Structures are given as structure tokens and as C-alpha cells.
Amino acid sequence: MKVTREQLHTLISNKINKAGLPREQANIVADVLVHADARGVHSHGAVRVEYYSERISKGGTNNNPDFRFEKTGPCSGVFDGDNGAGHVAAKIAMEHAIDIAKDNGVAVVGIRRIGHSGALSYFVQQAAKQGLIGISLCQSDPMVVPYGGAEVYYGTNPIAFAAPGEDGHMITFDMATTVQAWGKVLDARSRNAKIPDTWAVDSNGEHTTDPFAVSGLLPIAGPKGYGLMLMVDVLAGIMLGLPFGRNVSSMYHDLTEGRNLGQLHIVIDPAAFTNIDSFRKNINQVMSDLNGIKPAPGVSQVMYPGQNSENNERNSEINGIEIVDEIYNYLVSDEIYLRSYDHKDPFAS
Picture (cartoon, rainbow, N blue to C red):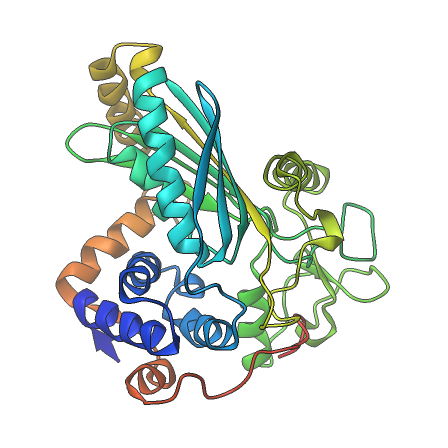
């Protein structure tokens, strides 16, 4: 089923609002989810609406949060999300970080006590659209074994970055610190297909090709990804006085309770360090240089980080966004949710 961006936004906002989130906040959640679907990151798009709606309707998302921002220094601050919708809290916190960076050159804003905030690329692009560099890190469910381990401890703990070029161009990347996302394992299950033995381990810590045997994902590049996960957990968890490691709340454990997740935004004004016009020109030059690299056999063109998602986004403006019929049928239905995610095993089908 193909829909326009505007149609998808309306459907998502209506459903989230029906679940109990005020319209203004529902529109922000829809902004972030449509951003993900338009860029081809469907794991963070409309597929999440049913889960969000159930959590909102059961009280696990605070529908009327008391958002508070406290500056803790010239370049730092903490935003308390009061377990409201993570998308809304992360967007407002990034607005504060942008204002601080414009005044002082650099901003570091921690976000405490929020729910899942979706694709981090949305928030770093907020900064890049203002001519600033954006970096964002956040905690997630414990689903990953530490390097050499057989039990999960960290989440996929994603990292995102965006830097502005000229004429609205920007470099963006948004990555989990695991070899592969959990959604890819679910896809293999649905097709009864094997997975590469580099993706995950079974309950004994052995690498597995059986998607149904997975009990832990693997960090990217072994100990390097493991180190990045730890870094994210320190900066977005321990540093903000929040639960960390295996104590980070599960996405599905109890949908009546807030998740108390942490996130960190870092914003840098390039003008505080160099000539801004030269900086933007050089970012464009990097993009051009990378596109001009001789491609390896079987590859048509070398792309800069985020270029494929950027191409998807442009295409969505012309041809619409493809969503599966099951999701569309749910969005147009009168039901807040069709199946329950409450207390679901994160490794279940």
C-alpha cells in the first residue's frame, strides 16, 4: 500500500491522539515516524504505532508530562522528560541545545526519563538544518551480549551524527552499535531463512545461523562495538543518574510504567572553530569526493553516509511511502491496538 507523506502523517497522528496523546504531541510523534518511513528505515516508522498506542493508552507514556529544562552551565543543561513521549522530549531538548550552541559555540544537553524516541537522525538533522553539527546518543533495551559473553547486558545503543553542507545538503548517519538490527532477525524468522553467523548468539553464547535460537545480538566489530555501547550507556545513562546496563527497562516489560530512558544531544557550531562558509563548502566537497571514488566490482557508486536514505526521502515525495497492508489496515481501523505487546519477551516472534 502506497500513501503520501501527508496521508501517513494524518493516519499516525490520529491513532496516537485516539490513544490519548494530545494532538500537538501526536503530530510530533508522527513527524518522527514519517521521517523514518520516508528514509526507508521502516523499523522506526509506522510499524511502531501500535506499540506506542498501547503504551499510551495503558499509562506507560505520560500524556501530560511536566517537561522541565535546567541549565547547569553556560554550555550544558538537563531536560526532564517526566516519562512523556520520547520523540517530543528529544525534539524540545534539541531546540534548547541549538539555542545554547548558537550563543556559546557548543551545547551538551542530557535528557532524563523519557520513552522510546524513534530514529535519532530526525534530531541531529534539526541541528544541521540550523547550520550546526548534531550528535545524539541514547539507551535501549538489553538485547546485546558484551564481547565474549553469553548473556545480554547492553542495548543496541544507537549513535547519530549530522553536519551541514551547502544548499541544504547534509551528511547524516544513524546507526545501532550491533552488527544487525533485531528486525532483520524477525524478517529471517518470517521467511524461515538462516542468518549469517556474525549477527547473534544462542543461549550458550555460540554464534548461530538459526534465527529462532537467537538470545543475544552481537556488537559491531567485536570489542570496538562493545566499547561504543559502553560509551553510550555511560553518557546517556550513568552520567544522567539513570538505570544502566541490564537495568535499562525493557520495551515490553510493563506498558503501564514509564521507561526512564536517557538520551544525550551534543551540538557544535562550526563557526566557533572555523569559517562557516568554508566548512559547508568542504562538507559538499567530501560528498562529491566520495561519490567520485572508483567503485568496487559489483558496486555502481560509492555513497556518502546517509545518501541512500536521502535518495529514498526524495523518492517518497514523488512516489509516496510503501507500508504493508496490515499496518495500513490497523491505522485506518477504530482500534487503539489489535494485539498486545505488554510483557512480551523481547526475543519472541
